[in-house]
Length: 255
Image 1: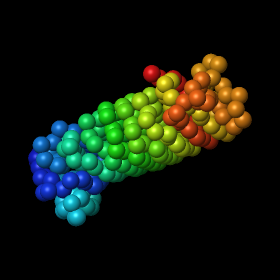
Image 2: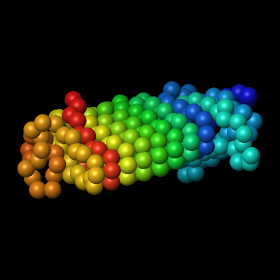
Image 3: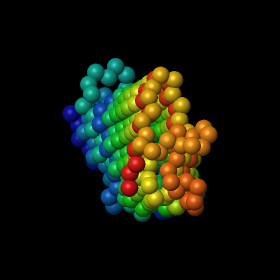
């Protein structure tokens, strides 16, 4: 087993594009770095991470990825990556069989892309998020949990696609702009928690699954399965499209 700590200075960058790629193991990403990145790696020799960084036109480009050695036999692999709380970042996370925990509530996120083959992913994108404008999640299998219970001034687009595995999306935050969300799953239950202080309408479809929504909230509007009392009068509206093939769809109300 090997252990290594690594620090990457920002080098004058005022924003950054960060791409993290992990095949197997456990990945944790959070804030609190004194530089652009402070990281601690624990790994077997076959799984040594590779770190590359450059500054291009004032934007830092940071890549942390799994080593490309063949015939990997061991799976001792833990990455604890901390990013700077003051440098806005476009963050892309790619995991194969790794489990990922993303605690991003202190980070100034510009955009977030998550791709998972079979690992479970928990992403907390809470806190004050004035700049993030889009979030995209794709998963082949493995459970996905996304927490959007912060304050969002620019987020207008959310896309989530899952082949199998549970999908849990919490949208109970404070919204300052209209959001369009497209949530699609083949098999696996989908649970969406919606806020009660802005207008929300959800159009749902499922072939063999079941729809569960709050009592008395079934919509009288054609094509909508759920509409809250504020939808017609609210300045800010969340419009959701939720579709499954065989999984159930549950809509719950948060704060």
